[in-house]
Image (cartoon, rainbow over all chains, first blue to last red; front, side):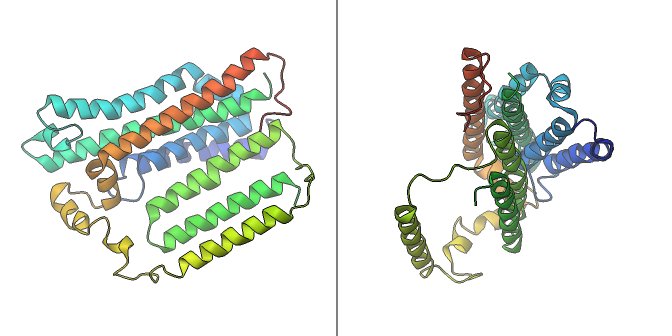
Length: 140
Length: 164
């Protein structure tokens, strides 16, 4: 689809906003609808759009398979690591109150933010990886 | 209908309709997920599968009498099941009382987060969400291993006939 000028231009215009909206959904999830799952999928949708218009090679240049695999694992580690951090700081596993014992609700804010980030990383990377493996199969 | 392309498109449209129902039920978080995962990524993956396989379904070898009967009976049973369900918006319904409403009352004090769904998902039920993330991780790794592994064994295989 690389010779469709209109599609190329429109998708190039849209892409930053798709990614920005994903980040908004990610980090505004405590205040509005959304969270890590939705943000991850929207972020991945940006990459999928890029891949549909500009080809899989372009996506692989932006997000190499090796890096995507690392992000898949890092997301889970960030989530579980938050739990370990709360344990080290004297709370239970995933008890975010321990992150800021003077202001438990602030600790909860930090905990939710970090944990949702982990979810978003894993979801986005898994979606991108599944898409690019699917799309890459036909030309192997 | 044999055209798989139309089938995929109908699935996406149905998914979007589902998202609108969720929005009508005051569940924007679920509507969000349905619209992005169900209508967005699933449609793309189904289209990618079509690109690898074919756009026409094969004609069924047998007459569809038995499957039709099973579908009809199952559908009737499901509709019968809905007769016992509480009315829409019923405050006494289990959906309104479980998990306990105190989650809604306590979130403001415990966490200071306006979105109770996020509070329940990420904090009160943090273990569950960790489990879900691990499920996604495992599923993603499994898909990668399956698809890449089969490509290595058959380096010339176009995945034409068995990619479904």
